[in-house]
Length: 179
Image (cartoon, rainbow, N blue to C red; front, side, top):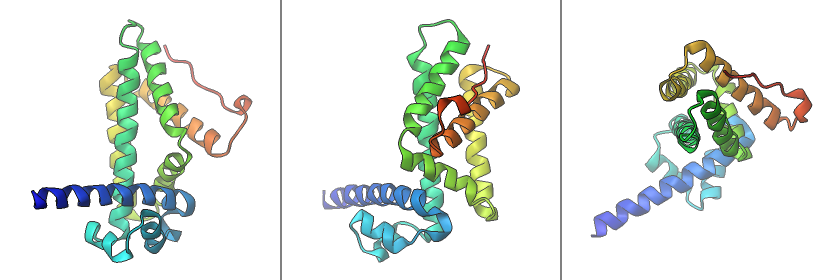
């Protein structure tokens, strides 16, 4: 029983660290983020971070994994929300709305973008490439659309990310039609 409680506590701490890291990486990016700041945000000591993650890079990659899972879950939830319609384009739009709701969390959005910004590091680039392809393949698998249509959908999402990050007025964001 004590081992189980300890395992639950460690998992709760890991989730706290990931949430704090999302905020820190969103605000400062990979290179400028400090593990001491992440620890302070999580309410733990800095050495405890290294008990959970080998180093800052592994923490950053774990954060990007978490964000990517949330993106795929938002896509799947949006697709399922519109399952009563026979229109694949309406379901695709519902997927996009699910994604937009998720990315309304500014820290999640900025952290997601920081993953791409840090891609000059080959290990981060390879990891982000893999996550991007998983997200792309999830959309293709859910929708049955061809790669070109999925690419337009993803491109629209990236445009919306930039628009949201910059707080652009709607008139500056063109969305692609899907049919």
